[in-house]
Length: 96
Image (cartoon, rainbow, N blue to C red; front, side):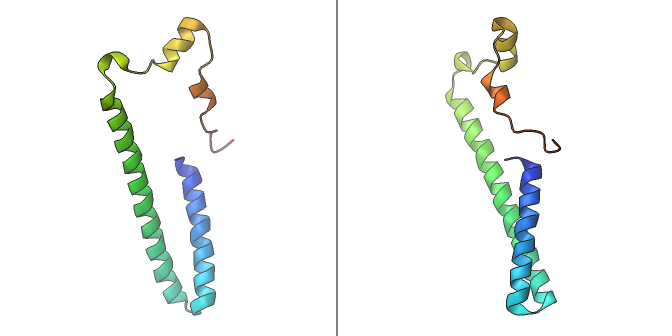
């Protein structure tokens, strides 16, 4: 998960939620409370998703024996002169 993209998406979803809630309830106070609750739920979900990804990666690394650790892509590039696919699949910088 790419954090800046997530934050922008979350703010967009919260804005849409706030607009819809305001049109349904007509109350700014109720809209603010419900939007705040929605933001907290989104953050909890994001935290749990990141926690799951870290747990899954740690589990996969534990399954590998020390002799089977994946090769370091930077060493592969230096040794063979090939371009690593890992570098090509990285998300672009969020300012570009």
